[in-house]
Amino acid sequence: MSTAALAPPNSARSLFSSVIVKKAIMAATGAALYLFVTVHLLGNLQVFLGPEAINTYAAKLKSIPEILWGARLGLLTLVGLHILTTIQLMKINSKARPVAYAKKANSASTAASRTMYLSGPTIAAFIVYHLLHLTVGSAHPQFSETDVYSNIVFGFRVWWVSAAYLVAMALLCTHLSHGVQSMFQSLGFNHPKHTPRIKKFAHAVGLIYFAGFASMPLAALSGFLPPFFERL
Image (cartoon, rainbow, N blue to C red; front, side, top):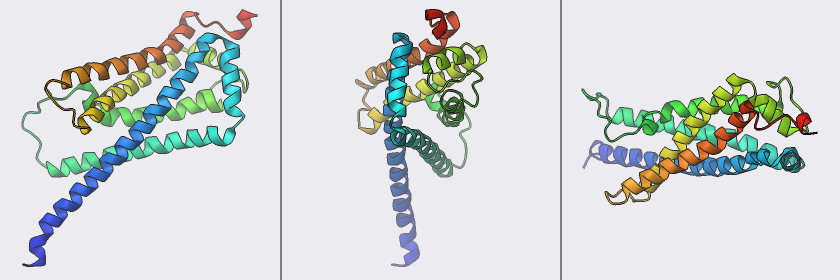
């Protein structure tokens, strides 16, 4: 048997392995990002406990800068890897189906799945701005190194900042919702009996996370979270 005859099976096997590795990387980075988002949300929700609670929490984090900055750099690395593998898989899918369907059917897809390729880079760009705004302070005219509570309140009292944050969080939570659903499918739970329940659970997760993130800018804009000096 000639070497050429073995080329297609080997190529197919190589492609299959590549896809599996890339999907594994995307799943692993997605899970790590999910954990980060959860910890980040729980930490930031302490703003509702008052200035002392969240400022103390922030001070403890800043007391271990090697862990704090390691987490921030790790976050950007994870986001980059997640986006990169997503783009690579998209290219592989495109090559596998070079001719587009005459009529694209979206009945089996969702808004979340159809915006995954757009939401990832948008969220990544927002993370960079968010770090400059509330972490570095270069995009925050009233930034304080020690008063995190006031940084959040004054930062979100700028309506367009809050609007951009809400849009980014909507994309993030839509992304998370689809990620939960995809995770269950990858684990083999794609069954007519379980899939509707998994979809409802994934949607609920997305809505809960969005409600948590949205509560902060909305509370700042509405005056529910007054500036620190008004509490004295």
